[in-house]
Image (cartoon, rainbow, N blue to C red; front, side, top):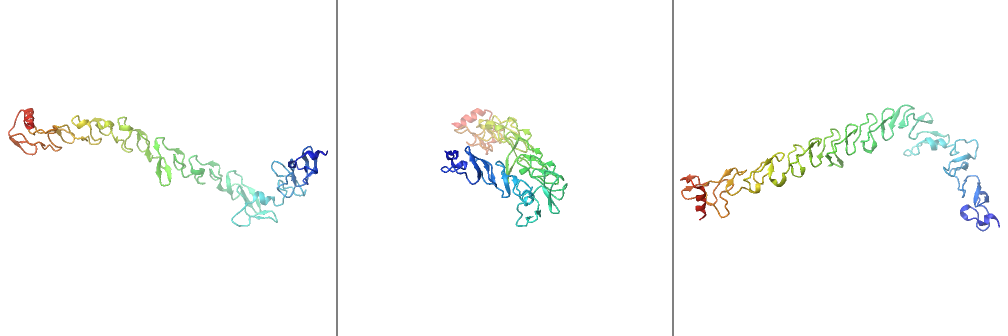
Amino acid sequence: MNVCDKLIEIYQCHLLSGACDPACETCMEKMCPHCDRDFIFNTQCQQCWYPYCQTCSSYSYECDRCINSSLTSKPYCDYRYVCYKLCMHYDMGREICGFSNNTCYVCKDGYFLNQTTCVRCTYSACQTCTDATNCKTCKNGYWGEHCDSACSSGCLHNMCNMTDGSCECKEGYFGESCQHVCAHTCASSSMGTNKTLCNSITGECHNCKTGYFGQFCNFSCSPKCSMSECDQISGKCRACPLNESHGNVCEKRCSHLCRDSQCHVESGSCSLGCIPTHYGPQCEFTCSTYCKGTENWVVCDANGACLGGCVDGYSGDKCLTGEKHTCTVANIRIGLR
């Protein structure tokens, strides 16, 4: 039996007849050992991609030998190689290459047009250049006359101005070239469509993380502040623990005359009112000793007016007009009868 009878179709030999595929010159040992012209040498002898190849590589598909030996412009064996390799592939409908004379009209990136030939720019980071040494535009991530300076890592999309390296900053960076990092204590803030940690020019934080304040959030809130929270600008505590203290940094205790010893953080005024015998913002005044008591022992209101009236011999809102008595406790007890 012919050895080709044993081969299967993927090796390019006919299963029944054993005849080689037209692409093969010979058929043996389960593979095509030699490929016909215009075909890639592998087990299947696939056709070369470029029509002017005599043989081509099975890895890169580029020509190894050209059909016309006078055509030495590998890897395509095509007189139009310059058009394919050096000219811009497409430019809004303009004619970019003269295929008949292998001449570029518009060069691809990294080349400049010298009469009818595209010549490579000297500096590798030039995207376009006017001649060998003068870059017109830089590749993304570079700037400078020769495109030899890298944009800052803080530049958005790794793009910067070709002249001075300035750029729009990514979140977390600031400075003309976004070369500085925002303080780690800055908190993210939504500014328009972009989220930013700090001002892109000055580095001032838009918001501070909990526990910090100042333009650059470089100061710590007082540990006496409730939840360590304070005003971002002044550093004043927003609240004090259990509302039992007050002051800029909760350094003052609420008056013991406040009901439940609770007061407002800024003013220190008693937030729940006073104990029964006192009145005033901080319960610093004593109700008149000539007020009658009430059933809940509240003697006067927030303005000092007696709630139960006056003991005998005295009158007025605060019971200060009339005969004086010396026994305060007795007066209160009499008022309760």
